[in-house]
Amino acid sequence: MSESMPTVLEVLNLAYRYPEGAQPVLDDVSISIGKGCFHALLGPNGAGKSTLLSLITGLRKLQQGRISVAGADIEQQNMRALARMGVVFQQPTLDLDLTVEQNLNYFAALNGLGPKQARQRIADELERFGLAARRKERIRQLNGGHRRRVEIARALLHEPELLLFDEATVGLDVPTRQQIVDHVHQLCVEKNIAVLWATHLVDEVFDHDKVSLLDKGKIVGRGSCSALLAEWQAPGLRQVFSQLAAREYDTTEVEL
Image (cartoon, rainbow, N blue to C red; front, side, top):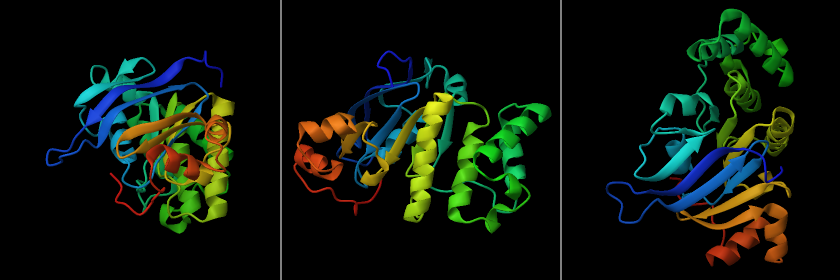
């Protein structure tokens, strides 16, 4: 991605603290993502990734800092900002008793798409994800990988400028995870979409991806994956993190 590409997501000096917490969950976090950029938010469980995404999506109220999506402030222009993003959360949000097509039609209606427009976009996305033959199947009949594909297809129906993924491949087998990660990278190129991919899995980050390393609520390193590896003369991002955070990359903590 060229550095001159228009900014889609701007997170500035974000700080957040739970009412009962002595320590901030997020501390002076800033992230900028342009069109067509796959940006990995990488950190161990407990780093604050889910809290950050809940603030970007408006599920939590900002305490300090600013967030804008395609120029729309998340607080002052909430509906406009939300309309420009698609989200795939860690926990599945599909209705298991509805078919693939019914789930997508419901989402399309919520986003104001007319019947004709919805039919065309649903057909396009099901074809893109190889799900056209499964459109009449109930979600509970699908395996985890196919359900994730349906959720990503749903997130694309209203043609967002930003896609957010919160540990979207957790619980999937390695080949399925890789297929989904590859496909999302392709979306960045084909549709010029900005992606914020929150994960604790280092193998989901490609060499050319932008990376923000998050540890205990703070960004401890940022840059392209390849540049970070070169700068720290490390074989992988796990070792880069360990050098920057002065501790081992531990994924056993509780996610925030």
